[in-house]
Amino acid sequence: MITKITFRFYFKEFLLFIFSTLLLLKIAAQDSSYTRPPVTSNWDDYKKQVKKDSLKKMVELKSVIPGIVYDLRYATTNNFMKRLMYPAGTNQTYMRLPAANALKKVQEELNAMGYGIKVFDAYRPFSVTVKFWELVKDERYVANPSKGSGHNRGLAIDLTIINVKTGKELNMGTGFDNFSDTAHHSFTKLPEEVLQNRQLLKSTMEKHGFKLFESEWWHYFLPGSDKYEILDIDFKKLSKPLN
Ligand SMILES: [Zn+2]
Image (cartoon, rainbow, N blue to C red; front, side, top):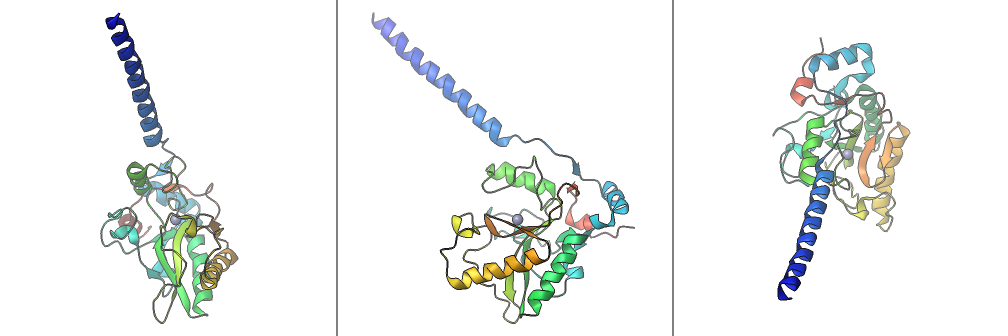
């Protein structure tokens, strides 16, 4: 009788153990796995694509936008990961030609008001998106590499507005990469000044073709992700002349 009860007890425990192990394995497998999308990682392939369609050229932003300021957070440890995601000292950032040209117009318009653009991040190599995913594995904070992101295609940018004279950022209510509701466009319980600053960024970006991203006031992208390849070419290589 005693043996039977003990056996039953352990049998129940055993089943529970198996069940939870399987569940944990399933969660782990779901979280880490992603389907690798087509990625251009070869310099010659990229060159061929640009030769066929000159709009695909990756343009270093400072080379076409006078006075643009960089604060490339992923080339420092001052980011939500608290670690270097780009080679230390990276001081170049890129977008596709139409995005760079549109951003130039945004800068001209802001400059006329005494303001200017500060960039936190623009083009992000695909392998860095994978690195983010492997470290965080949460779609609320980082992009799942399966789809590739606007940043990988050279179409997306994270930016804010600064006062050109003082170099100070306008108050946007939260900092860059703040993952709370306060960073959402739909969050309006904010001081009037903050709402106006966000509106200025939004209206100027939208006027030149950029689209907003609801949960991040700093992220804008040019539509057309179906036309542009996901790239995994490092910044150093992109700085080489095309011919
Ligand atoms: Zn972004």
